[in-house]
Image (tube, rainbow, N blue to C red):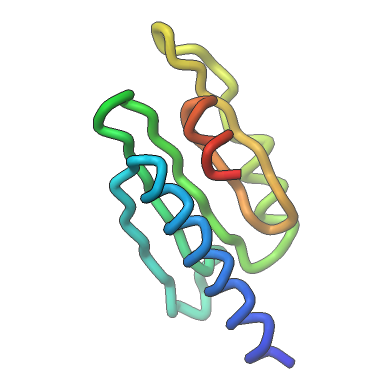
Length: 103
């Protein structure tokens, strides 16, 4: 059971990565194997043309994801609006356009 959910989360990460690369983002991923860690993996995507950036973090439990969502700032930096959105245990944080592209 545990194995299957891990594979599902890996596939989700791959999908996000490919989707963003198609839209012109440079994507880096980091996976945490630390049992104490609150996060499973992180995907960072930067669009060099637009300056848009998004960090997608998969949390190991919903409470940590909710905490990250509530700590996320929804602010504007110049013309770029920074937003934080959550889908289950996955938190998307970055510029509004990049978060849209990632979701």
